[in-house]
Image 1: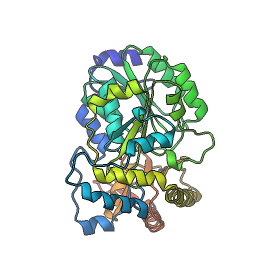
Image 2: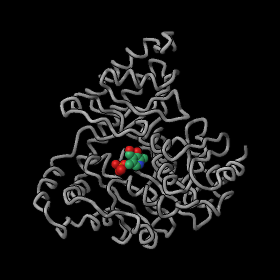
Image 3: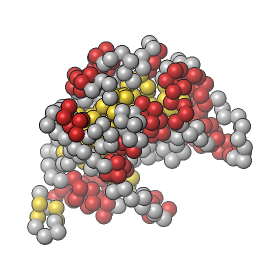
Length: 396
Ligand code: PLP
């Protein structure tokens, strides 16, 4: 079925239309469940003791927690807990200064997840579409679907990269219906970057008024010289929206702070869709985190070293690993990933959810050295045994 037919069949609303190769149509509920990776159920509630004992390498977090400087700033902000118009440390100005843009180019979000939702609500509601690759950070597609838009997704290339020519082609083909293009760089779940040349190719190749959301959640972990942030394209006046988060390198996932960088007009268009509710505590934490570049450099170093050590060991055992530029990586198990994830869970090791259509790849976040050695012990044990099926037959 051609991509055009697929789109027509969907009647332009609701669901994912996968173009150039295969077609998947999912309901908003299925997409929501896929994005959350828990079958759509509320996250399981655990006691503090149980939670602390788990090896948490499922969500690409910083396992070390916020540094002293950030804890101090957050603790100091508790005195504003009962106020609305409190001093906020100048968080917007500080972010703007950090990127060399104006405060009017910044919009805060409760995590960059809110920014992704706001972009979807602004540009791809009511029959409009987002174009991107699959697998990627699917919250973008699920949110667009929930606001009665739709997603056109194309597969990754054979080497798990995002195909710029294909993204340009499919966007041009559906130009009138496309609300924005989504690019995750480095991509989650693969960890692969889009090079600076490829970003240029994409932006130059798309219609010049096409909004492009570039999600740089893992920017701080990249060492690859072929990568560059796309913030300069905002300064150039292009309709590019950069999403950044304090949840990864800055270790503030539980505190919820992210932001968008874009043209003033785009930010103004987006503002009515944002809640604007960021807590006093995390605003102060964010300001301190921006300044504590030394702690972030340390986290980057230790994370990359540990990622390289772990992936080298897996490769030497004969498991192919996708080259990653992020704080996570994907290993090819050569067997279905779902039962393996379950086996890890039984051992108290939380690993990444499945990322269809990559059904034999496991995504592993880089935890602490102790967590990674527990991961390797569990991996060797699980992979040495055939997967047990309901019928009792062994399945490799
Ligand atoms: N973008 C990507 C690529 C992610 O992987 C995540 C979270 O894992 C987010 C955005 C959202 O993160 P947060 O809402 O915590 O900023």
